[in-house]
Image (cartoon, rainbow, N blue to C red; front, top):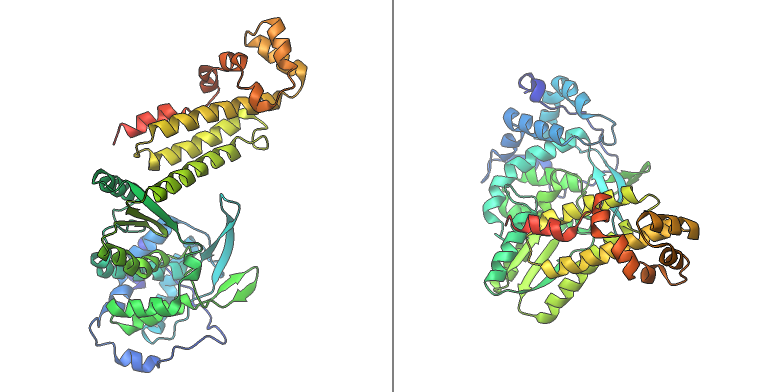
Length: 414
């Protein structure tokens, strides 16, 4: 197999056997004797040179950091050319043990952290090879309302589906966000779900070993009794398999269910649910923009405006399809006011404020009176003088991203 990899191949470092590794309940010898079952060639298809090469190319394209062994993507290729036959043999014999997953924490926008698991490059390649063979099995089984981590499906498609239902009269929604979903997947339930459609027990046991491989965080080894590391190539597919019955359950009840990974929208006819959804989504956008335009972030106004532009543009690329002109006008007006207040805070001293107001054309007496105002920042920056001089045109020329204009240009394309 290694001779056929060349520049598109992959490599595998032989991971050490984990001391005290939890053994499968059933003998691997018995499992391997049962390989001539309903899917006798599934493991063979996973380890086939063409599938493995394609998996390595995908891992290489995704780039990514090394795992616990420190091996980079570039270093993996020559290693596998030398050791891949040995690796393949160990997998066929059931003797392969995945390496620990290197755990890192990534800050989340809400102030928390997301635990990301980074498998070794070799384990990522093998996981990708497994995924490529399981996707054709599961794609026909997934509900039509599932859009996360699936071929030719994305978040925009999910939004279009919601819009389609809305046009059919489903104008209210309940939104569910499963907290720490990837970290709390029950292994036993997942393995039983896999066995319903994956009849090659060797593959099931290999996946189980990945789930039980453990993590290494700050040099400390932690056994994994639940969850699937967010960051592994196999995890997104396993997450969809785990929630597929949830999707079908609500469809059986006649409730439209749109899901993107662990973000779920149930469409119904409850006005209270829709109001709660609108309030929470709008509040989230306002809070994010407030954070980006805070005094702490606005030591220099232009970098802050650029951060707001980047965030707002990304947000509109996903949600610009929705009909929310009035909401965008309200948020846009609030953000203009917020930026004016941020600029006013930066000027700090009376003389600085007076000088800048004069530069903008404010008469001497009115400028001095405004600069000496003892009213609050929010009140002062909403006066006639400030609205007339700190105009939208001036702010836009300074780099302000007008949400209303941007929304109209995006929304018209749908």
